[in-house]
Image (tube, rainbow, N blue to C red; front, side):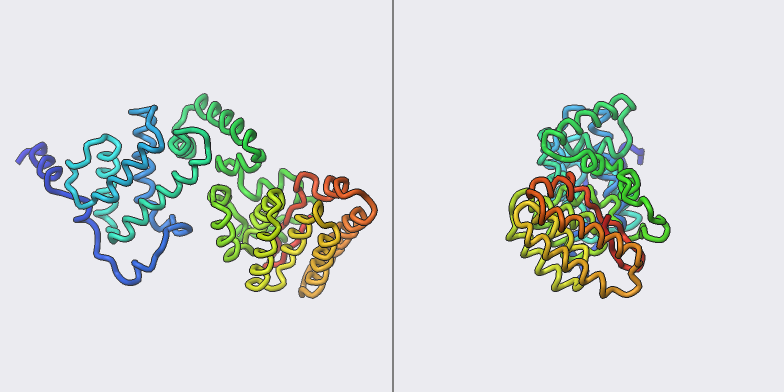
Length: 351
């Protein structure tokens, strides 16, 4: 039998479902591969590579909705022979998945979760006013663009995020050009501290910032409720965003539930106090007082950090008592740059 004849048989009879394993009760309990992406990297990378190659080399006009349609068709028709998939993008994704599935089969449910994850990421880019938001972003992230194309994409993306009110830092995090360590260093937030003593690289958000900024408020709430102590800067971002929208009831709900789950996590008191600088100075002061009281009871808390924190809060309190609120907010928050620094052994401080 010739190779061409063999390929015809494969296309006419073979389907991806033949490579999938039956689901187990344990596997069926998995709701999402979010935060477990590394375990499924072989399949995700093949899907992403197929999308990028198709967009960059074959069809520069392909839209995100076309990608969604292709993924949905494959997901729902995995039991159909390969010849069923007529469109080039669909065929490429299917054929590129054969090898990793042969080497390390997924169950039916896991296969669905992998496709749902990619569809979720695409959906998270729907806020961008560009029908090719995802395909351009994933092509940029994978480093396929030429230098000129990359520079143009960055320029256009930052123009768009400026228009939407995102900061330059947030834009660079979405482009995965900046991690938390560089952010702290560039903003001068580690001055006077020894990085090796106070910076815990394992507990600071790295590539997660990208996903976080694309989450809905509900998703942010749930994520931070579970993992907030490890991602203080994201807690601060979330609370101050709610304050900007004057959603103080949500702040109180988050504050109450977070404290119930993570007792004596003192940075939250300071963050919430900062959120009330403009709307309720007296309440802000009460949260700052709470910050100091909780910090005083922490064992092995560095004296120099406690002194610096006390001094900063005293200054803010004095401004609140003596000056108009808008002046206080300008001096104390200064474009929301009162940041959190991660300390060793789960301790926290701000500067």
